[in-house]
Length: 304
Figure 1: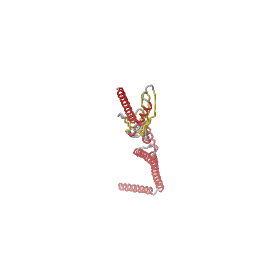
Figure 2: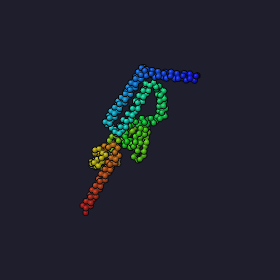
Figure 3: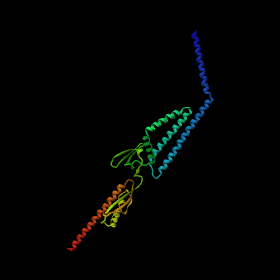
Figure 4: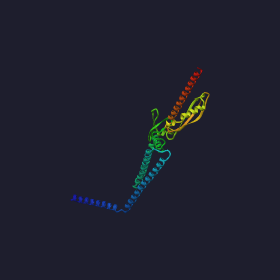
C-alpha cells in the first residue's frame, strides 16, 4: 500500500515537472520581447557582415588602382611582383576585416571580449619583444617588394656587398657576386641600395698619350677608331664622344672618351673602347714604321 502511494506521488511529481517544462518551452516560443531581440541582433549581424564585405571590396579596388598606377609609372614593376603584392595586401585586408567582424558578432551574443583582447595584446607584446629583428626584416622586405627597390636579376650594391640579386624574400635577400660568392642578407640590415640596372650608364675611358705624339693627330686617330665601334657593340647607345685632353703632365697627356651604354654594361663597353683604341694605335704605329722603312729604302736607293 505504501509503495503504491509512493509511486503515485512520484508519478504526479513527474507529470508536474513535465508540465512546467512544457510551460517554459511555450513561454520561450511565445516571448515576443525575446524574439524581437533575436530579430534585431540578426539584422545587426547581417548589416555588420555586409558592411565588412563592402569595406573589403572598396579596399580591393584601392589596391588595384594603386598597383595599376605603379605599373604605368617610370619605374615599372614586374607584373608577377604586382600580382604578389596585390594578393598579399588583399589577404591582409580580408583577414583584418573578418577578424574585426567576428569580434563584433561575438559582442552581439554578449561575449566578454575584454579578457580575450587583453590576452591577445599581452601575447602580441611578448612576441614583439622576442622577435624584433624578425618583424623588422619582414616589414623591410615587404616595402622592398612594394616599392620595387630592386628585382631578381638586378645588379645592386648594399654596404660592402655587390652582386646580382638571386632571390628576394620577406625576411632575407640573396645576392651572388661576380666571383661566385653568395651573400644572404637580412632585409632589416639593407639600409641603402645602389641599383646599377634601373637606368643607362656612362662609360668613361682615359687614354694616356706620350707628349711626343701630336695632339691633333692623336685626337683624329681616336675619333676614327670610335667612328663605327658602336656598330659592333650593341651595348653602346650612340657613337663615343672624344672630349679632348683631360689631364697633362711632363711625360704624357690624357684624352677622355665618354659614351652612354645600357644598364650594367659599363665595364664591358670600356673594355671594348680600350681594345678599339689599342688596335688603332698599333695599326698607326705599323703604318708609320712601314713609311719609315720605305723612306729609308728610297734614301739608300737614291744615294746608290
